[in-house]
View 1: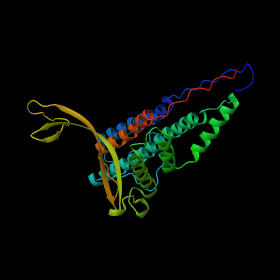
View 2: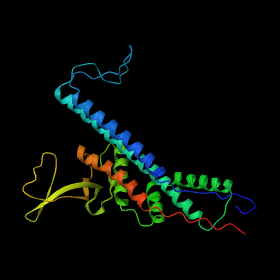
View 3: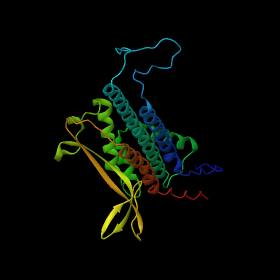
View 4: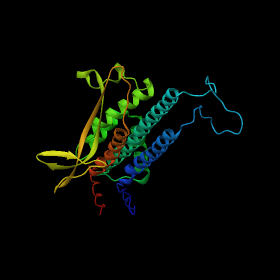
Length: 274
């Protein structure tokens, strides 16, 4: 602001604006999937479940008849697939929310550099940046944010591969087609994530510690993050274990930490005119 007597506008970059929507969506997904898995594993009735309506039960094509063990397991598998598809959609939504906020913060930091603006101008800038970020597809948004940080994102390829899986699940029922290939050398869809690994060293070997592991003899237990990849060939159906699913969700969480740790510093406000 340049007019005499005008007040300075203080702008602070709040990393919680990036983390809060990411954490909220991931937390809800985690709780919903955990509840759903427990429920489907415990469902042992040999008839199709009905919605708990007061009287009228709507069905499409299914007759109320007893299920064989194979039919019941197939029903559960379809439900697990539906949960996987829904959850990956939520993962992408969470990543989009975090990246859009990061794009906004980075752009505000850049546009504030060496300028003096009125409150209305600042608000207009913020709205314009938000609108632009909303229109960007995920690869463009990831690269746009990465280019504006103090260092490139470490999880770029991970996030893009997770989105590839989401596309396949939502549009092709999880069956890999040529549209889904991101590993050209193997004509396959490769999903990449980052996992947390606890291990100890013995006789020159690194032995991973898992539930029920017994650490033999005096040893130093260590921790590290490492990348994992799972490859799905053409016409193969996407399937992930619960542990793999958990690690994919964890990767989305780590993306938020990576962004926040590399945010640009907000420049100091220019000195007021004499």
